[in-house]
Image (spheres, rainbow, N blue to C red):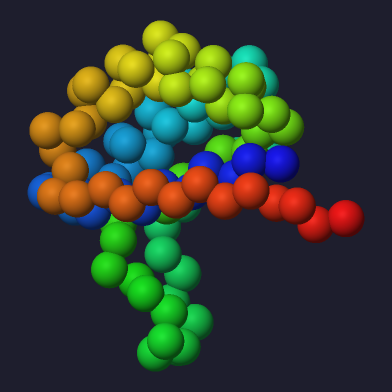
Length: 100
């Protein structure tokens, strides 16, 4: 399984709710997405947990071809184009789950 994890820091923190709504609407429904979540940092009192982001996104795929189709899907392309100027920074991590 391919796990695509993205952390967003927005220029205007007030935009976080709209970004989450648009991710929920436009990303979760892309064909090939088998798991999805999107949300804000949860503060549970652990000083070792990085909470410097405004929104986290997770998208799971069963194959590299599903992931490639997601990257090129019009919903993904449009969302990135719209929101990229609003990011202070973005961190993207792709993790391959090879657990038995």
